[in-house]
Image 1 (cartoon, rainbow, N blue to C red):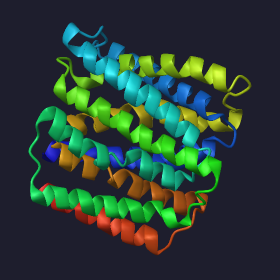
Image 2 (cartoon, rainbow, N blue to C red):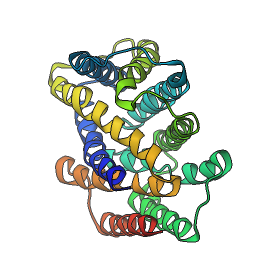
Image 3 (cartoon, rainbow, N blue to C red):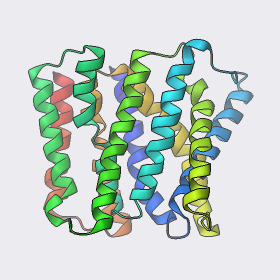
Length: 285
């Protein structure tokens, strides 16, 4: 559990800060081309590192189900939806909704994996969802806006797709260490995103001022953060992992407020406290 929590903490820092960076990058980049670029660079960076270490090899037969689910659902469809949504929804709210897998992961862990969830962890999940709800601030959203409605629906669906990838990697665990599979997972994600970007954003791309953001996320935050998320999701019980992932948006909202000037108030403070309390309660349960 201790090593899994260290991975979770690293994922919180890397991914919590990635959404504000992505929001800033989209000032000079189109969403899907930025998502394609981050996946392609992550695949390239991970492949170069593994080749240097002498560990670059094709996935084994036992690895392929996990690689396909992670590549298609988490690194392809998830990022397609979230990168489109971040152009419609504030970065802080994007970080919250896209990482709220609690409402999907716990019931699917019970139904698909047969996991037993204690009453204390159900309570922790409820506390975490309450904190996420406060952070999202649905009372402040103009639900009559088409962009707001579509953006929020895309983020809820993105959370479901990420959850499916987690469930698959736990039901059919790969034989090869997860880090050695990242080039193939990200490669599948990039292959899925590239034609989608070409179709939906034929005049899009990544401008010069956004390349530093793309290089940081593509070569560093995406591969390392994704590895941490996948390993934490595989090693921690579903209830603990789903609640723990809520720390990502709590950190993302804070960074968005400090860097992008997105408003910070009682909702951020109360929501953050509820989420931290829920993580502690889940870990102790």
